[in-house]
Image 1 (cartoon, rainbow, N blue to C red):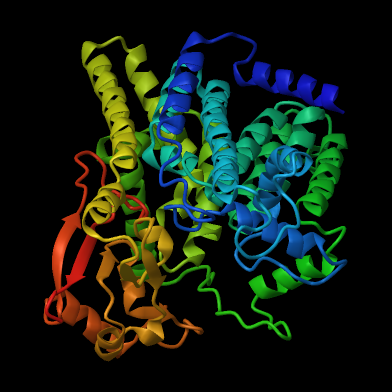
Image 2: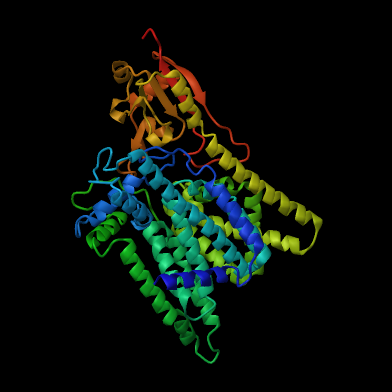
Length: 569
């Protein structure tokens, strides 16, 4: 089995470069690795937490595994996502956990500190880094797959440029520094797109099996990817239909293109992968419950807010325009306006001049936008990640077309775009290294006596770490002027990230009253605090100002404000 996996890896590597060793690709992948591993320990060590919103901490992974595997057919499911990514992390953690068990550093795992570890801080730090290494690998592999897609459709020059634009896109670099699902989600969808393009060129073989595996893993990581995956069988069917013998009737040609040995192998591979990645063998009832929850069917004994998702064929001109504006905004943040314009123009050029490339790029992008993105009322940047390789390929296509004309102006523009992309990637690394929370921690270490009481009102990922301080996250119900006056903490810390969560809470039913509801007592307290109308004064504030990046990821560059209680109060 291992030997077959290595042989398949060699075949895939050869297919990515179409049998030619490209030193440019090696250099781009090396640069991608450097971007991703620079300051990989951002915000660590931090126990089971990190500074990345929605990141999976090591204990969270172990808890998910325990809940999913601990009892036969318990019906338990992870309410946020499928199990594909946490189970992948568990596989990577397993050798290190085995070493800890053998050496006696992990005994009698428990839900409370020190969780069964002899040295919990170092163990959790190592596990967090192992998880981030998984995301680094997947992001670098996504860059390689972007190259492979462009190389197969548009040639070597377009492939090199597309890979560079993907490698320097700041969201990809950011998610490599986290244990968020998004890196894996992006990788599996990009891999599925590439394997579908390869499969469209041959009647059967390993691409179909690999397509089944990657598509199933994408769905087992985030179901949102179904919009892109829907287009892949059509890409294969259209391409294979054209390759059928002319003597066959149109109906038989389509049937031969749709149902063949490759299709059957891919479906079997997908089914086996889904069963394993969702733990359906041990907990099939959990899989059923998750599907029921996603489709809005109530589950006895489960109380969860209704997910704000809604699909409609057409939502009105105003709403559709609102979606497009949001999409342009987040893609502008991802690439910067110059490169986004080039990427959009490149996709238009592909649609006009390259029919096969248009089918393989525009159809999945359009399907993903229409079927997946439009179900959300608010399009966040991470939802649009699957479009990043496609836009990068579009930019590479137009730049390569300009370079083929051998005009100096085209060379200058392409060089400027590449340098701008490099500068944006470097700035992201600088922002991570100089995070404002580091400076806030240093200030607190120099000004707050050990054991000082600190209050904060946002998720721990939004604020500094609290070494040697008595820090407490205050529940929403206790955020009021009177309650703070009774507790009299020494310091209050506010972050600009997730600021709405200080005074608001998720509406259990977003159909009635919107996504968030506000608590008036918390709003009055926050207004009084920031207006320095309480017995607290702002004594320090730490912020960062990006020069090239317009950030749409709230975990980056928060402004940290520190309020100290007046000595006389």
